[in-house]
Image (cartoon, rainbow, N blue to C red; front, side, top):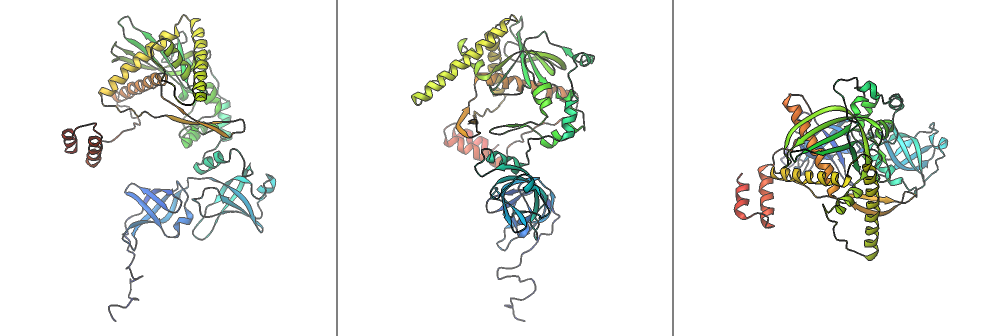
Length: 493
């Protein structure tokens, strides 16, 4: 047999055999793109090869083996799907003979889903061809078969105003409803201050002046602050967080659903809360003039903002004033503690901004009037809180903390849910004073746990790699932020 025999064992094509490393399977998460798919593993990211792409969806956890492609590139071959990320799909309903067809709106999904002839969900929900729907996945696509679904909800025609939001919810597995068992559990909860105060650790702080400061359109208020000046010129800061743990039983229906959701989700036109509204918007919302269970951290600081003592404990509080960031900022400007930025732009935009500031000041003055009923000068309260926040910023910067000056982008919707304007919510002194208070409380609680060797979860930022440091040093030197000598020192470690 000649050396050029192309049918020789192992010679699968002219470019050579596809060799498998035959290493143990890796587990990773799928990232779908328009024309490709990747699996993100602890060993790196690998492009998916072969027909396995038909059976995976974005976010799925999969087991893969790593093989060398004909070009020498290491690629992932799907062995099995370990865990599915999506439970539903948003798409357009069509018919194909006796079958219903859902064409996914997510263009990264290449396979349609079918509705079996015996499924009556389309008729029952009044769905017509061309309508957008949310469909629950019954069986997932495989390499040989398409997936099947049943329609759960009709969104509307292709001009439905919340079609985009529904698409996002389905793509990431979000839902605006809660399991009935969790809702029943939440409805059975109630506030009993007398019973709560029988706990010898819980303290009654209802005589303390406590306020919340949140966005003007906030629906729930889960943190509050109190502040007093000490005779020595320092500060006594109280940070009060709604005591969710009092209500949520370990391994209960609410707890298990909250673990699944992991966080509340803020979309353009709605909030998908981690907890049922009975908790998030009622029992655990620190609404003004209502008793609420909280967890408090009292922090004593000197005149330079350095922590001298702290004390965490469960409490009962009663918020006195509900402020918004813009109203608080307006009072700080009025007190001369901060200045507004100069307004620039089109005349109508400047006029609108000025009107907004005037309205914010009116809200701030209304809060100031309410505070007088408790013999509190709200302007002085905010000025002191702003001074403390600035002291804490200086301390953090001296420790090497990095602040990223970012803006929160929001879409303003009209009554029909159609976006009419994109606005940026800039950071301000009012937002900063709350951020600094919460950061300080977190630091104190973390130290308290560490001193007692109590296990807890921490977010740890690992030291940068030498290559990353070198790249940053070169870029900073080119921008003139550091000189070449310092850049060389950083690069050498």
